[in-house]
Image (cartoon, rainbow, N blue to C red; front, side, top):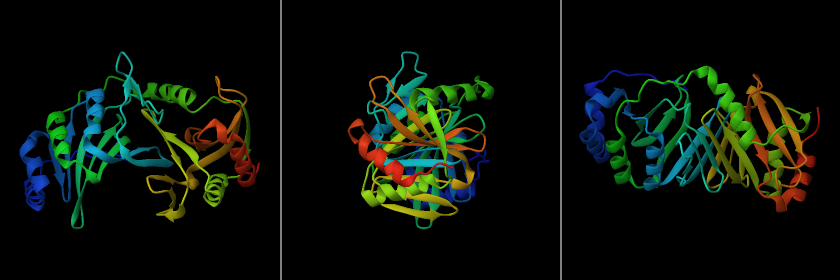
Length: 307
C-alpha cells in the first residue's frame, strides 16, 4: 500500500470540517501545515517518536489493530497493548507476546479521516520508507474519540528523513522471523490449499489456532477459533467475533510444515508456514498452548497432505 502526498485542498477540507463535530475539532487542533486532503480523505502527518506514540494509543480504548504484508492481513479488536520497550527504544514486545516490533524500519505516520457514505473512518498508519503500511490502528464505535483528538494534536508534526537504508530491512526481517516465528528444523512441503483446509478443519472442531503475520517492523499474533471462512475480493477472509485474517492464496509460493524438536522449554511442535513467491515468510499457524499439542497434531494430519 503506497502513500501519496496530497496538496492542501481548502474546499475539501471545508467540507470535511462541516460534516462532523469531531472533524471540526480536529481541524481546529491541527496546523494546516500538517494536513493533506483529497476528496473524501484527509491525512494529518505525525512526528516519529514511535515509543511515545504507541504508548499513548492505549488511551483510545477499544480499537482494531492491524498488521500486514503483501499476502496476509491480521486484525484484532482489543485495547492497544502495553508494550515493553528495550533500553534503547528500538524494539518492543507486548507482555502476552502478541506484538513484536522493530522500530528502525518505521519511517512516517499519519492519521487518516476517510468519508465512507454517511460515516467517517479514523485510523493511524505507520509506514516504512517505501510508503508501505507496516501497522494500522482503527477506531471502533467503542473508541474514546476525545482521546483520539488529544493524541493527534499532541503528535502532529513531520517525520525526519529516514537514516536507515532499505537494504538493511531484509536482514532485520530474517532476524524477526527467527526470534518470533521459530527456527527451521525438519520440514516438508504441503499442498497449496493446506491453509484453507486447516482453517476449515479448525472451524469444524471449534479448535483454537494461533495466527502470526508481519513485516520488517511488526509481527502480530492472535488466537482464533474460526467461525467464518469466505472469499473476499479475491482474497480469503477467516474470522471470529474479535479477530480477522485476510490472505491471498494466489500469492503463496509454497506452504511448509516445520517440525521443531524443541524450542527452549517448549515440547516438540509442528507449525504451518506460508511463504510468498520471493521466499519470504508471510503467515504462520501454530497451536495456542502446549496442552493442546495432541489435538493440534490430529487436526494438522487431518487437514494437511504432503505434496
